[in-house]
Length: 346
Ligand SMILES: NC(=O)c1ccc[n+]([C@@H]2O[C@H](COP(=O)([O-])OP(=O)(O)OC[C@H]3O[C@@H](n4cnc5c(N)ncnc54)[C@H](OP(=O)(O)O)[C@@H]3O)[C@@H](O)[C@H]2O)c1
Image (cartoon, rainbow, N blue to C red; front, side, top):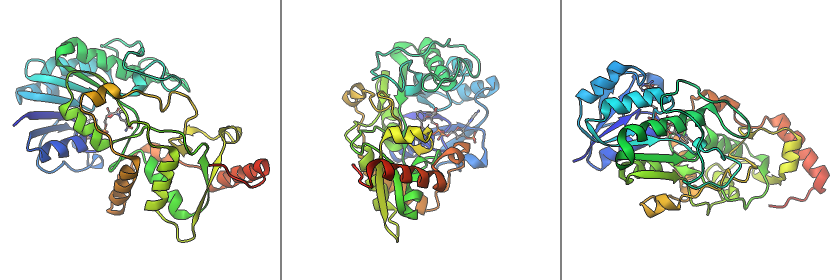
């Protein structure tokens, strides 16, 4: 029975990974500080408390090995990841670092494959490396690129798995993107939706990332959905899972109108981004290595069920930034009607 060490493990992706590994009958150790707001420990795991940035915690983890696999959800500051990887190098066979598509120089403006350039960041960089631009690089993305290099430096190509997920949705999603759209549908009335409805999107289900993290071979992999689903599919699923007693009418408003009203991409209309590369990430390498992703309708259905079951883990500060205010939505719709004389194209 493999022994997996999950750095993190109680909130969203780490939690899904721990639950899946327990379900497979693996021996599962998670590592966290123990803060109650990050959720209870998943059932069936062994928990080690400590802080990722603390060298004593890293040597404590090493002493509790060996591990067949380490899955690192806490790779944000390269020098901490470098120290953790060093500490675990003699007791772990394989190190999976959860990076992000944000590690790419070209995200979200260019189509991406694993061969696209990543941001320049040293493997021993401190907190908040690089800079933030919109659209474009972020300190988060620089940090992820540096953490990838840290793991590769210590574990080499033969022992490293670098996973670059795009947006992750599903039960436990703490950013609150799906939750906002479900709540908006449940409220009913006239809803601003970002035209075109047939734009393909690639959010990946947390359970699919977790499954791949436990089984991926060594290498570097983008982890996104196929792009077969569209924004229309996503909002149709939200409407289905959160029907409004008074009815809901979607109005597909063109990007020019949304931008004229200064609608913030990504946050005010969660998941809406105009940039060509935002949903153009090639995941064929991961698919050939075993990644299977489910349709967005299933992700929305299960997120709605999780929320209905009391899954109120939307504690992230980022949740407060999400969504259009009713006043702004009404202004946009009035302008949209003026521009189109009331007719909507999907
Ligand atoms: N969400 C997305 O759309 C998305 C997209 C791409 C990549 N990612 C990446 O996916 C990864 C998954 O994150 P997650 O939040 O879902 O993972 P998670 O493992 O489910 O939750 C975070 C865990 O880390 C623990 N923790 C936080 N700071 C710690 C520290 N300094 N030392 C020890 N433990 C600490 C928390 O517990 P305590 O508070 O008790 O310590 C919690 O158990 C991240 O690396 C993220 O960058 C996410």
